[in-house]
Amino acid sequence: CHRTEQLLFQQALKVYGPHMHTPFKTSNKAPEQKNKNNKTGFPKGRFVLPKAIEEIQKLLGGHSMEREFLIENLHIIQDRHNQLPASLLAALAQKMSLSQAEVYEVASFYHHFKVIKEEGQPLPKLTVRICDGIACEMSGATNLFRELSKQENTNFNVVHAPCVGACNSAPVAVVGQRQIPLSNAKKVKRAITMGEITPVMPTYENLNTYRSLGGYEKLIECKANLLSRKHVLDQLEKSGLRGMGGAGFPVFRKWKFLEGKTKPRAIVVNADEGEPGTFKDRLCFGSSPHKVLEGMLIAAWAVEAEDAYIYLRDEYPEVR
Image (cartoon, rainbow, N blue to C red):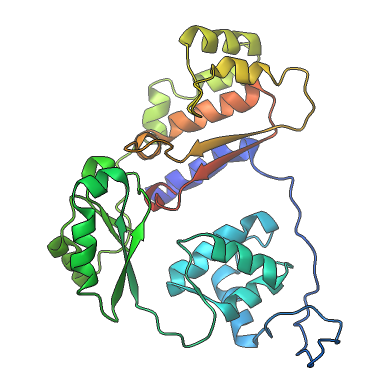
């Protein structure tokens, strides 16, 4: 089942999971109300409501309060409330031993988070995002946005969104977290009416299938020192594989630059499309995630990295 696959996915990541960060400590006490001259000596911020603390505890009781899990915790709150109320941000800051300013800065930085500064501020129950990437623009996204904007009401609002990595299905609208390929107003309204707002899970190569085809055997050989780091670099050089950062720099040279350099080291898998009209990263994670994982773990082994991170776009909830 999908849940089992998620656990296996997480177990594979634990080989090089993040463990270096510690929370930034601040006072757990709610800030006092300042006087006119702000001479209380306590930090500025909202008073933390007991009911907000209870809500955070209910939502995040089993989740980590370490600093590096701030964005993940914000996602959980947003998924539950379709917004980030200021009262819950203040409570989250207290539970995570972070300043309210730091939590607010992170929450307000990402356009997919909807920060509500005042309680009771009206907000539609649903957001419809119209992709304005070049492929969608060329396929009629502007007209779709205009047509839906005329019909938006208290149940949903319509906003522009950067490329959602589905250029093969343009124009694309995203209702909640459900991508509507080859969108038109009729399809979008049907999805809203039917409550089709959750992502469609991709059909991907599971762990058993991947292992039956020889998956993870190279990683096992590397970890058992049956293959050398030099051998891996030599194979990379022969393959002619180049980086996708723009300059097309050979990958093996990037890795060799680390020889003799200081440690600890970390690698990042950048699952964010970089060129207009591309959706390769989404396709890789949605079809063969274990191939990506094995490549990541071999790379971490080859350059002696202690940590590995996957930078995954919020626009790809189905592979999150």
